[in-house]
Length: 221
Ligand code: CTP
Ligand code: MG
Image 1 (cartoon, protein in one colour):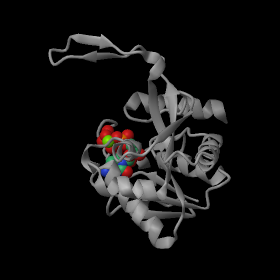
Image 2: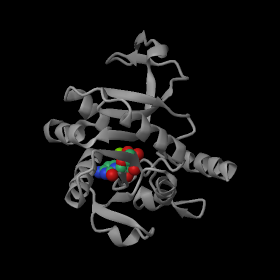
Image 3: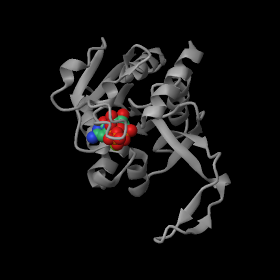
Image 4: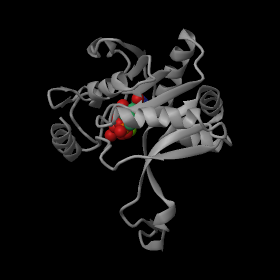
């Protein structure tokens, strides 16, 4: 099945002065680590990468198909899905953030197998149990309540979707407001399951995350 790695963001919070996906991490561009994991995964036959408009020539990893990304993450997913559908008619697709370079190939495989074997689900997404206590604040910045941590998870990628459900969700959803595509599937009435991932599958967002990702990659080698 195809995978779509979204790499079209500008990386404002990282502040590297160029696209985050191209920032160097342990000697390679950030997005290349995710491409590697998908190459190693068992059920992935094509890897699409949504790239910043006009920058496709800078994404030189062999064997990938580049697609022009969009204004928001979900617009990039929509563009990628359109390209994937133009090339074939897959039943499922895996979506992953280029910003998560430590994704284990085994997690991709487990998520794909998990969705394939649960016909009730429209999507299966990686998530880690919450370790911090989470509180909700009021408009004045004062704590309103402490949430029950046992029913909360921190959502990551990879996220595996039934193509039909993802397409429907993208057609009707608020693409500009969504931080992931699973939330669009939820909003369109779909059921989304979670597969437990480790907190080590970090997202590179701010400069300190790059240092942490470097250390974790060295440890994994
Ligand atoms: N992304 C994308 N297209 C966009 C925005 C984001 O493909 N228009 C991708 C990013 O490249 C990243 C993933 O979505 O791999 C998660 O987004 P985020 O971590 O927020 O990355 P950026 O949007 O690049 O960073 P920032 O929000 O700090 O600008
Ligand atoms: Mg962003």
